[in-house]
Image (tube, rainbow, N blue to C red; front, top):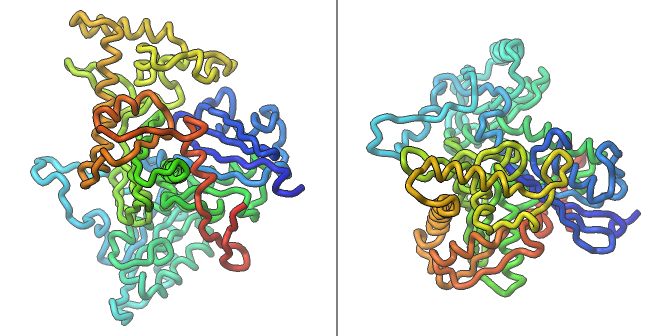
Length: 506
């Protein structure tokens, strides 16, 4: 069976919805939208979407010979970082530098704050390793193999499986780190991240933070990748057929997909789609607007992708190339609060389970429900994937009931529709501010920029009036822009058993 006789799948797994776009052997496109979390119906939304497009039952084996390629963007690593649900990690660092990563650069982002709240580090334990190499490569203290093994035995006994090894000046003189990594891997530690491999650049803080992130997230990512690969019956050695979008906007093989490169895996696909569809329409200056279920991502494109190389995500520093994307916690699933006389939207989200109130799962009122209340989301036109049988539309009746109760609680005489419109105005203001951050605040003239809509069409119509964008257009098919970005994403190099090889375009 040749590649032209097989299916290709492009999948964007978000916090609320998973979008699956399949290209059949005849070239036709098929779209499936799934709730990312629906444990009563399926184990994994991406695999479930592939099954349904292939016409298979929930328990039928996936015929691997019918699949040419599966390309995914996922928020698995992002969610693990935000929720602090990564692998228990131990930091092994040069003796005398135990608190180096916690001290960081001594930056104070809020200069006049009286109470400094620092996020807890990702590592749970620090082990100081008796070694030291100077900047010129001179060995000040030799690496003690026996003492290092003893430290690892203690960590092993305490259940640690993920290690981050960070030695001073190892970016230029990695011999001690290489010896430490060899011992750790021989002792059977599942994840060993070494700073000169993860981020081989000067400055121990940036290099060390990135190594810790990699050790913390890669096991979670590897478990998810293995599960998807096994359920699709794909070979572990077949790098080309299962690929993932990296934060930098390129596709990499499943075997090389690391935690440090996965933070913006999902949103990066949206930026690639924004650029591709804009160029196809003849636009060279665009602002991308990707309103998802959990958050809204915006990005600017001016003929070339904008990237950052040192980023702080969820209070964690890391040094890895990423698309420059600004995210605000205002999406369709953002929960509506009436708090001490004011309307507040998010930052907490109803996610896919229970989801918004309209999802028939007992969820709270969200931005999605406000749009249902205002008639901007028509249940008849929304996917019928709700209820026990995944065949029912949005529940507009429960939305009207809950907004009626909320309007009564507000008690200022406004109607349920006016209450819903007030919450939508708050959400729109937050999204408009995000667009301002990546455009006007950086000196771009938005009157000369097109607005590229990657998911929903109604909200940006209101936004563009606030920002005076020149025109708007959207991805085709609509609502699955980030998934389509995986079609256009460039291939990065992958490492096989015989060294490095380039994964060619299919």
